[in-house]
Picture 1 (spheres, one colour):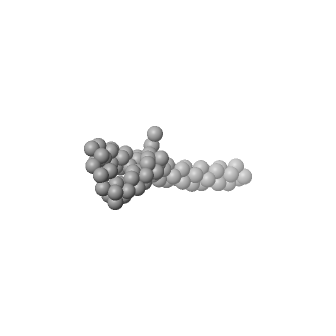
Picture 2 (picture 1 turned 135 degrees about the vertical axis):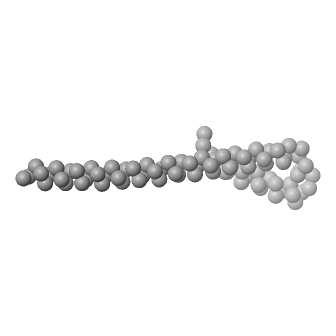
Picture 3 (picture 1 turned 90 degrees about the vertical axis):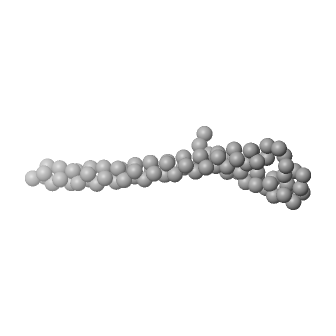
Amino acid sequence: MGWTIATIILTITVTSLSFALFNLLKKNEALEDFIAKQSEAINHCGIRLKDIDNKNIFYADDEIGWFFEEVKKIQDALNEFTLK
């Protein structure tokens, strides 16, 4: 009788933990996909920013040049969050 109760409790525990682990794995994979997409978007923005600045047009105007430098600083900060 004691083994039957222990087996039932162990079965319920293992089933519950398996279900929880499966759900956590699905959530983890979804977050990995989200991070990969964010990393790709950040990299694309960095490439686009370099393409825009290729001819150094924005250095001619003080106000636009200042703004563009600030945008580049933001991009550099975002680059730290990309997947390596």
